[in-house]
Amino acid sequence: MKYISTRGQAPVLSFEEAMLTGLARDGGLYLPESIPELSHDEIAALEGVSYEEAAFRIMKPYIGDTFTDDEFRAIIARAYDGFDHAARAPLKQLDSGHFLLELFHGPTLAFKDFAMQLIGQLFEASLKRSGSRVCIVGATSGDTGSAAIEAFRGLEAVDVFILYPHGRVSEVQRRQMSTPSESNVHALAVDGHFDDCQARVKDMFNDFAFRDAVGLAGVNSINWARVLAQVVYYFTSAVSLGAPQRKVSFTVPTGNFGDIFAGYIAKRMGLPVDRLVVATNQNDILHRCLSTSEYKPDGVIPSISPSMDIQVSSNFERALFEAYGRDGAAVSQLMEELGAGAFNVSQGALEALRETFDSGRCDEDETRATIRDVHARTGELLCPHGAVGVKVAEEQRVPRTPIITLATAHPAKFPDAVEGASGIHPPLPPAMSDLYERSERITRVANDLGAIETLIRERTGN
Ligand SMILES: *Cc1c(COP(=O)(O)O)cnc(C)c1O
Image (tube, rainbow, N blue to C red; front, side):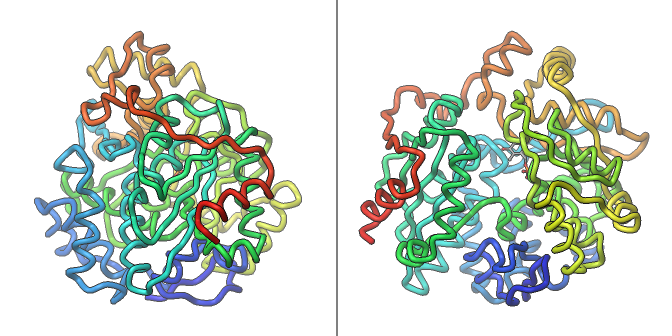
């Protein structure tokens, strides 16, 4: 399988190259040259197999001969070994025809573990084989950084540096980044905002001398391997509700469009998905775009579902590429217009998007009310992101087609918001119950490129 860029100008790469590169050199995102389909019988045969076995069968066509079957099976087994639920992604019934897919049983209690744990093992296997080392640098507002640190801690071929805004992440998120004791992980508290952290990471990637000297690599949500890992749970959950004989819809709390795009890939692979519903919080640029065709960022308003507080939704570019019939020149044009402020999706492309995607928004009061009401009705305590999904799903449901809402984080990851809405303090799961007693290791750094680069060079001996 070869990988092509959404802007049509970057070299065609193998799976391994696309994974290690992340962003394409023309600024685009990688996608497989063609999307493999599973037959009706192959999908039906996923019924009753383990999550790991389903993951192997679904992802295998995309990785080709990058790894032998035994190697790839071992990679998947190690990736999901640390999850605290045997089903990995268990499905719970909320109401008649409405189900909750719990994606928070990984080590950092958010769905990002599904992709990050796998990518950690894929990187390690690939780098060990080539004898090289990389230095992963990322910026985080909370969830991505903890998932990355947890996935790469203790691996031999990787150092990981995560920049987060000092004083602006939740205590659980900070402790998840600062308590791992392995010497290859480095939590850097930057004196600045999340945007500063992201800008410094970008600066490092643009400093080619530094980039080459330390072997910089990125694992942000545009990495194709992350999207691929997320395709799996669309299949396992739909099959457990009767696919491929029965159609299923999904509602996905969305920010960067990575998770819901994985659902689109599952549909293209032959899974009978009826609707994919984009659920946004008050930062509703995706809902506005799908409703009006205009994509126009107008500033982030901080919410109680912070992992969706986004204006530039990077993976949406992949959906646009498909909606424009894989026309890289058209996508480049849109991204250029975005650089100047906004773009409009063409009528044809908008119709193509609406064939698959619906959308809705949920404001702060509605999010809190949903946490409270769902707990009162079902006993289920939702995190604010999952609550956005549940609210939008309730508005968009149609009779007879079951709908699955993705619960993207554990309520204990956002204890203040959950307690504020429901009056209940969500306890951490047992494996993490001593998080507040573990000792922390944090390096405070100035919001200064030179200082950050010097620190990374010293720590990696480059
Ligand atoms: C990252 C994140 C999201 C948004 O996912 P995207 O793939 O960026 O759309 C939603 N909920 C939680 C808890 C997250 O961490």
